[in-house]
Length: 222
Image (cartoon, rainbow, N blue to C red; front, side, top):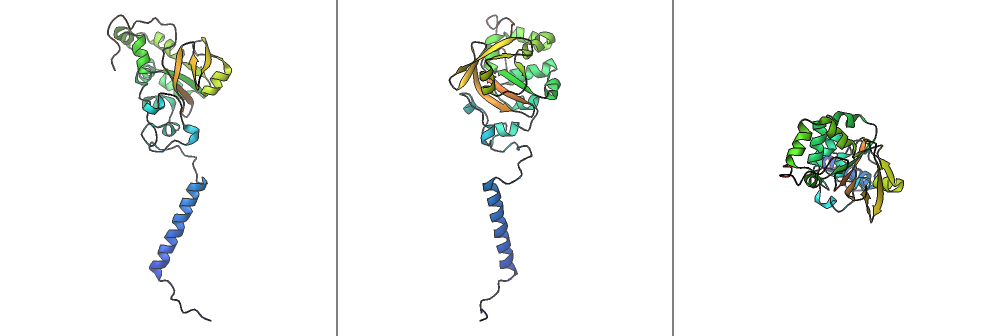
């Protein structure tokens, strides 16, 4: 028997095609079969593999905020440092020392990056200005005390127990609950930021052999 139902017109057929395409898009997103090989944009949320951990992380950009961990995975390390809001002093030192280009060109790097507060506790304003403006060799040596060859997670560093920084110093890495202590008393605060060629761990103390001068006059201004 021939059906007497009316055939859908052009508008109805177009709506049906659009609905089918929408279903395919949703299914692709849910099953994870879409192409995710390109770097995450600045507004992308961090997938599980790009989640950072530590007590300070909740105060830093997350979710879809600019500077969130997923967005930084597509950036070279010198650019990634600019987006981590508690590392402005360290990032300024990298630029002033001329190391930015060198860091970008390395195949793999681990950065133990002290917070702005850590620099405040370490250097007086006059001492820091002198380092930034005229003592480039000392500044580079200071930065090298916070750099390790190869891109290592915090778990890798703890498992190794000892690491050698680029200034040639061997420092211990000991577990401290879910975090770690570096060189005895530097605590990790937010770890495992990924950049295209590096991994960044935020710590609460400046490493290296330079003397503490913060007590001598006003603190570093930001």
